[in-house]
Length: 166
Image (cartoon, rainbow, N blue to C red; front, top):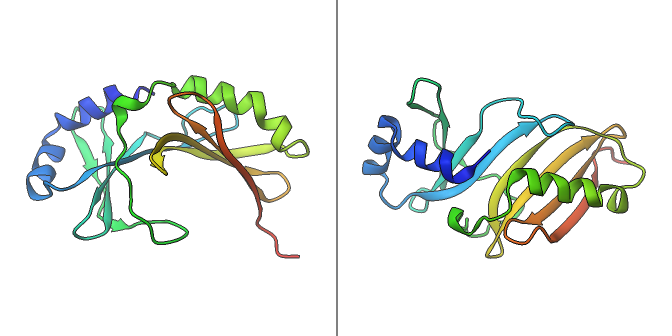
């Protein structure tokens, strides 16, 4: 997935052009895609735009016919209330493929006992850094997450979250 190309294609669609006239303050917040264990997409990439006046995100999916599907604006999913940062796509120099390689290089170091299943990847800005945010569910019912700097491929953070209360 080339985010810049997808963003450029989206900006030319009738659906996006109409939406952006009504929401001129809206800005690019993220790219999202469900992926399998081989990092292959399970569906089309979703492109999110944050509208500061409403605090909601509108998601677009570029269709094969050259237009885009618009999902209804929805509340922001986040742990704590924080400003949704603009994704500066031009600062992303590490490709999804390079992010995937960084994950593979470090997964055994950070999660040595885990076998991953399907998951998702988000390209977003966190703490003023563009990051590839990979999350997978494991065979032991945990989420494993690794955030990789999208301009240097350095690991920003990693965590393991158990989904079963003991």
